Length: 214
Image 1 (cartoon, rainbow, N blue to C red):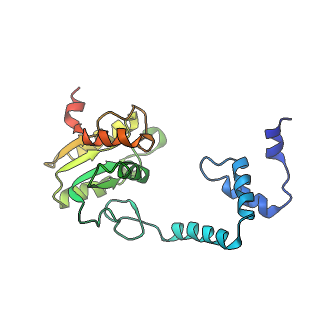
Image 2 (cartoon, rainbow, N blue to C red):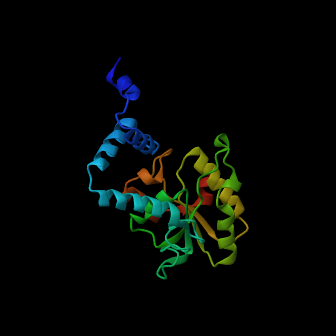
Image 3 (cartoon, rainbow, N blue to C red):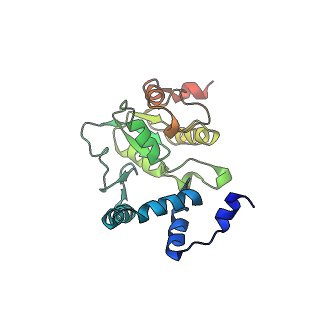
């Protein structure tokens, strides 16, 4: 029996510790070994620090909101980006997730607003257009003076399907639809692209129509 097998079958001396390890190991990318290391670290911290850590997690879950305009995560009903008067409201960057907003913001190359879809169309996973925040985007375009929509969606097959669907839904509006330049590798995700590459991809965006005709 190797060490890893022994670890997964080992008996904890404390049920409280075991429960903590099980809870921590449910987090993405956290295996039982890492969960145990984190739990033991917390045990050795001052009680007030652990309580502060716990309050921050509970408060985040309980009080965080989705912006009523763009669906970004926010402390208020309208996020700080949408409420920023210096932002170019006529320019909307459509992204897959909140993580993509953070990635683009880190480039300091974009001063428009965002729209978070909450995923991409993926028939194999049972995710259709109705599961995404597409109606919210259509409503924003219909009720505001939007001049350009930038599709900053990861260039996977599912991403391209989503981009095509959105372009069809927006076809009746007199707006420019563009997509980020292909500095991000096909099949890659925006959050993993380096800031320089992602920033240049946004600046060098091209009309979507020219891509669809290739």
